[in-house]
Image 1 (cartoon, one colour):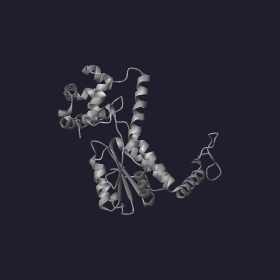
Image 2: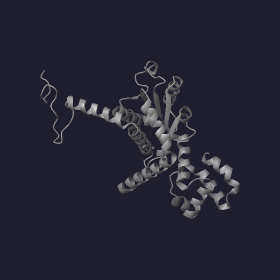
Image 3: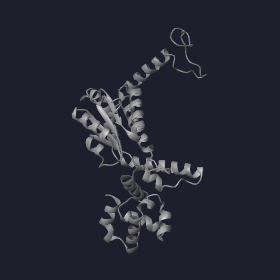
Length: 300
């Protein structure tokens, strides 16, 4: 449930002071979404403990969980610019660093709780058994899609990014078959490009997997297996990708550990090719000799 829905469902069970706080937050949700529990308590004339008890009375795990729900509501209404307009830049570089690292640590801890090892193991098995693994991601998730596809290509030779590209989407979709896996990555304000590619891949028989932010995500509805990432805006107003990167690394590590012999053979072939091409740097920083016995470029 959204924050307003929780207030409506629990309002009659709240104490008078909690009802007052609920009305205050509903009227100032964009500001409260970026307050600490102490800041909200001071503004509302309550104790820190009372604010935390209020969050738990609404069914949240604690105040950070409630604040996250307020931020999600804000991006739904106002987008990234709305978030940026509400946040204040930390006053010092040390505060900025601490805020970023604290936020990343919290996101990783919450993401770990959202997923279980069995789901990751099943997804890794599907990846290892696939003929080809396609990855689709657009917008701010595009770099993460590139990373996942590149690492799968590196360790198994079967990772490829599948995005809008040069407008040849219909032609490229012909290559997806029932022997393949397609992984979609997307969060709130789910982009239709990603959803359309996932839907078409599913219709063509591919096993569709998802990395997304909530069980009600349309990506999760299209997928046979889903991993969830905790998300929160950073101190400067963009959505941190820390938890998604960690989930990707977890999935890749599971795929490697489940198929070590094949991964080792594939990596050895890659190493040999790098050596043959003269692209492998030695410890001294000099290039190995190119084919033909010279490390210098060919004469024109």
